[in-house]
Amino acid sequence: FFLTEQVLVGPEANIQAATWMATTTTPHDIAFVGGPRSGLHHIAYFLDSWHDVLKAADIMAKNKVRIDVAPTRHGITRGETIYFFDPSGNRNETFAGLGYLAQRDRPVTTWSEDKLGSGIFYHTGDLVPSFTDVYT
Figure 1: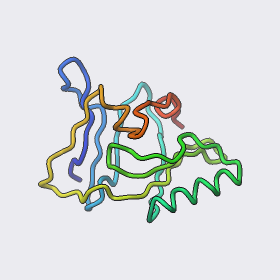
Figure 2 (figure 1 turned 60 degrees about the vertical axis):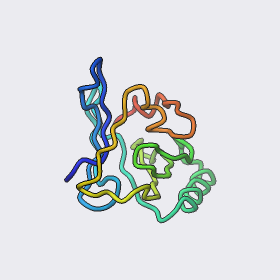
Figure 3 (figure 1 turned 45 degrees about the vertical axis):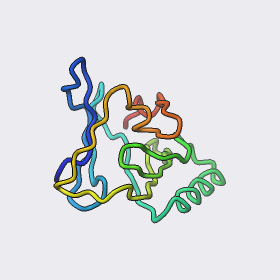
């Protein structure tokens, strides 16, 4: 694995609170985010396009699936996304888009604590409380 993106926090921005790592050219194959307690945040399923993410949202709405975060785009990884809960209460994500090709020699994108809202939810820049509070 090699580091593609990170979030640095703290008074001197020297605490690595989150990392996105890859083994391929995708923006990330795995992510680690620190939090107040351990647990599974979500499982992601890759789709081919933004159109497919929207189609998934239509299917979820039709079947009254509990949507946590409506279709949007991340600043981190630049991917298009929707988050939802399965019947067991686990958060899942449909994810599309390769905002960039990750390479070992590409500079690591670093997000600061004050930009975290737009890093996670690019369009609004607002953090959804359930997104950081719910783990299974």
